[in-house]
Image (cartoon, rainbow over all chains, first blue to last red; front, side, top):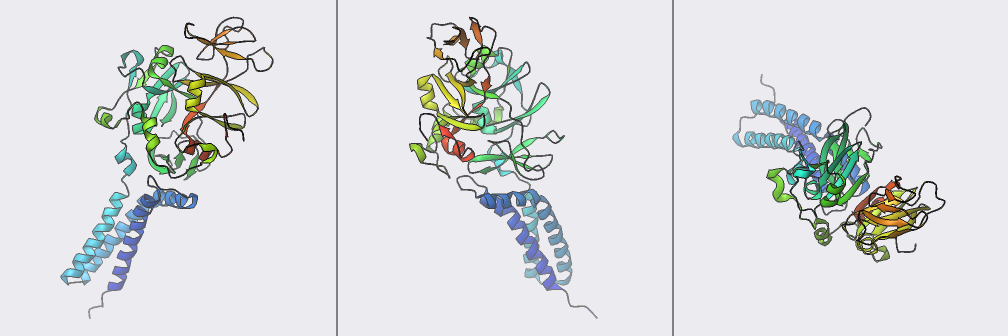
Length: 165
Length: 231
C-alpha cells in the first residue's frame, strides 16, 4: 500500500527556508543602507544577522533542496512541482546573494596596493594625502584614491596597518 | 590584534560612518574609533597610528624618500575630485546636532587628548593660521603649514621652559621656519622642531588631529567643546 506523501511537511520546510533566507539577506540591507538613521539596537541585530547569514542561507538552501527532492518524488502534478522548484531555486539564489558584499561592489577594494616613490608621483601637488610614518618609512595615501576604496590593508616597517578614509 | 593579523573590508555604514569587517574573526569595526562593535572581538580597540592630512607637495618636501599609494587604473574613474570634502557639504545627513549654529557638514579639526575632546572649525583655523588654546587643561598649538592648507596640532610645552610659551607666526619670507617662541627666541618649522636658537634640536609633542564633519565628530565625541564657542 502506498503511503500518503507528507506534502505539508515539505511545504513547511520550504517556506521556513525561504523566510529565513529572505530575512538574512534583506534585513541587514534594509537597516544598513546609506542616508538612513541606524538605531543602536537594530544595527546590533543586523550585524548579528550579517555574521551568521552565510551559515543560515546555506543550511536553508540544503534543506530546501532536500525538500524539493522528496516533494518531486511524491508530487506528480506539473504546477506544484514548478512552484516548489522555483521556491527552492530562490532559496539557493539568496544563499549566493548572502555572499555578495554590496559595499565592495559600489567601492571596489584595492586588494593589492602598489606604491610609487615620492619622486615618481605625477599627481597635482595640491592633492591632499593622509600621511603616516612608522620608523623611517613614510607612506602617503592620496585622498582621491582612499576616499574611493575606503580601506587599504598595508604593511609599513613590518607593521600591519589599515588606512581608512 | 588578539594575536591575529587582521585583514579588513568595507562592510556597511553606521549613521554615515562606515563599518569594516575583518576576514579572520568576522568582527565589525567602527571606522572613526577603531572599536569592534560586533562579533568575537567586540570591545577590542585598534591602536591608532598617528597621521597627518597634508598637501602632496608639502609631504614630499618633508619625506622625499617616502612612498605613495598608486592608483588602480580601472577605478580611477570613480576617484574623488580635489574638493571632495567641500562638494560633500551638499549631501544630506541622517543625524544632526544643530547646537552653536554649526551645520551638520561644517568641517572641523578634532583633537582628543588629555581626557578631553575639542573641535576647531577648519575655515577659522585656516584664517587664524596659529591658534593657542587648551584641551583637557593642557596648552596646545594649532598650526597651519606654509602651504596654507595643511594643519598640525602640538602640545605647547618646551622641555626646560616653565609654563606654556607664547608662539608667534613668522612671515612667508622665513625659509622653513613658520613660528617663533617668546621664551627662547627659537624658530620652529611646521614639523614642530626648532631650527635655530636655544631650543634647536628639540621638537614639540605632536597631537593627533582628525578632520571630520561636525555631525560625525559630535556623534562620537558628545562632550566635545568647540574653539571660539563658550559652553
